[in-house]
Length: 81
Ligand SMILES: [Mg+2]
Image 1 (cartoon, rainbow, N blue to C red):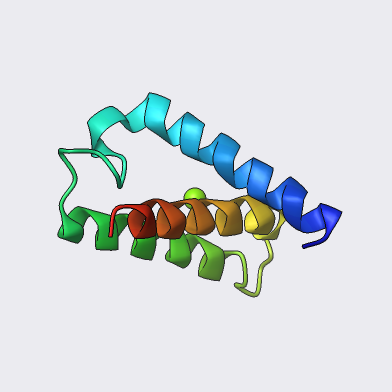
Image 2: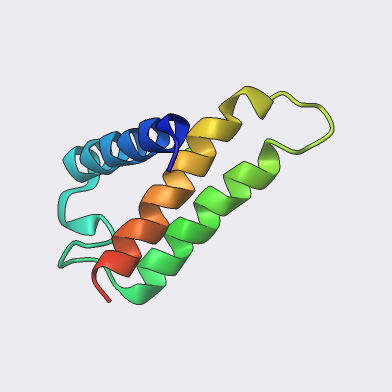
């Protein structure tokens, strides 16, 4: 794993902590979250990645952050399986 990978993993962990503060038990590893909630959240974030790819590029500056959010949700969901 390269230093760039380590930096991104740290950003994913920061995103997890931020989401936990914001959503509490509704984060993907929270007791209030169902699998339907998890799928909806992950799909929503993946849609935001796709939005960064639209022709107008208005949102393209957010691509890295959106990918970090997708990674956080996928890792968080996987962590409880
Ligand atoms: Mg997002």
